[in-house]
Length: 79
Image (cartoon, rainbow, N blue to C red; front, side):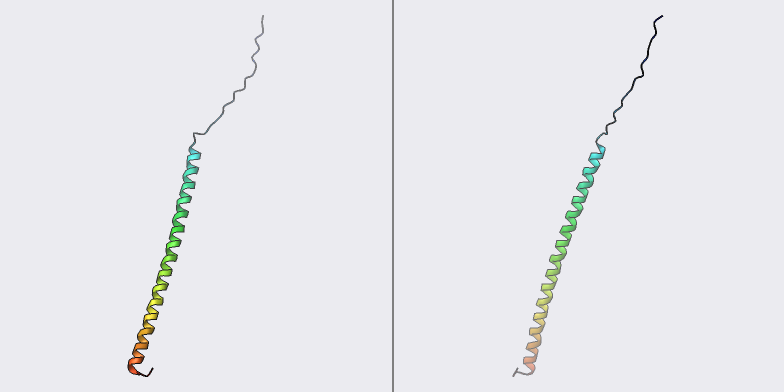
């Protein structure tokens, strides 16, 4: 009688992702870039707005000084 020898077999199963992790990573990176861009633009706009208000306030101050000087000259023409 012939003996039948069954050798143990090893089965290797390779698991591969479907690429969803890569897509999520790219989406998160894109979101971070967009948020950073908007924060930088907002900061720049705030700086420009502050500079404009400062300039306008200086102009108003200069005009008020001129008006005050004109009032003084009208009261006392020798000044």
